[in-house]
Image 1 (cartoon, helix red, strand yellow):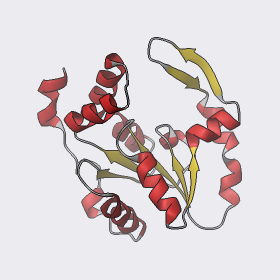
Image 2 (cartoon, helix red, strand yellow):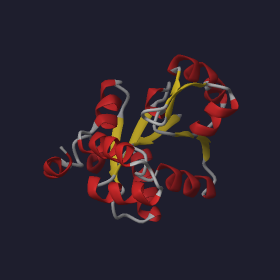
Image 3 (spheres, rainbow, N blue to C red):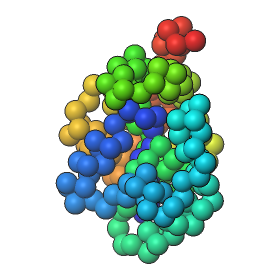
Image 4 (cartoon, rainbow, N blue to C red):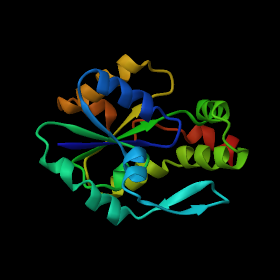
Length: 176
């Protein structure tokens, strides 16, 4: 089973993935995979990001389909891959703003990401894929609680994590 761990930058994907690895799970860092396979395209100077050909990315990940057990794809593009389930990590936009500031992101990039989180952009893209999608609020949960949530989802205990369970609508006025 291939599971996508996705979300806006700063929501906790890397932290969760490191903890999943420590528990013995097979986790693929898609950003590293993209660099190693030479899949980074043209650099978008204005947005300070690289384009990635998602079709090439999907093809490059085919080898992981042959692995027995669960494989997690960690990355904000992972919901565009051929996966069996998507888990979207979420974070309150005001908290996300502070997290991204600590990373020294450019203010314009911070606002773009915070607005994307407030608008549920990655959640909507994930749901549109028609792949079973779940969401976890990582705003104040510690890593062990988030791992427990992931394991609950894997065990089929998904009611608490259905799309729409996280709602940032009260944050809209602050960011638009």
